Length: 47
Image 1 (cartoon, one colour):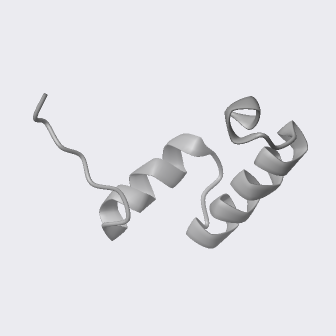
Image 2: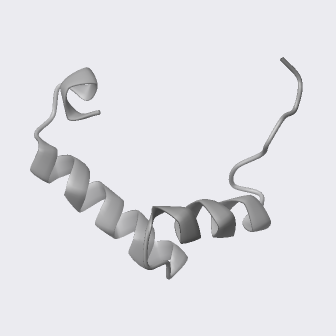
Image 3: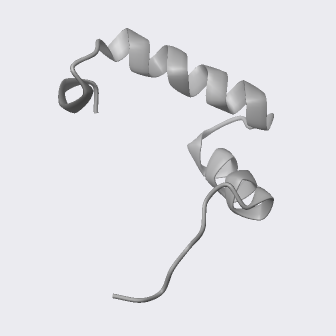
């Protein structure tokens, strides 16, 4: 991810930590579940 965004891995980790803190999530899975429940992320079944 860092390489695609032209940023360091440390910057990615810092951004992820901030996202987890804002969502009060312990890990990526919990963050995704909370984001879906809040309507921040929408799942679309269409291909």
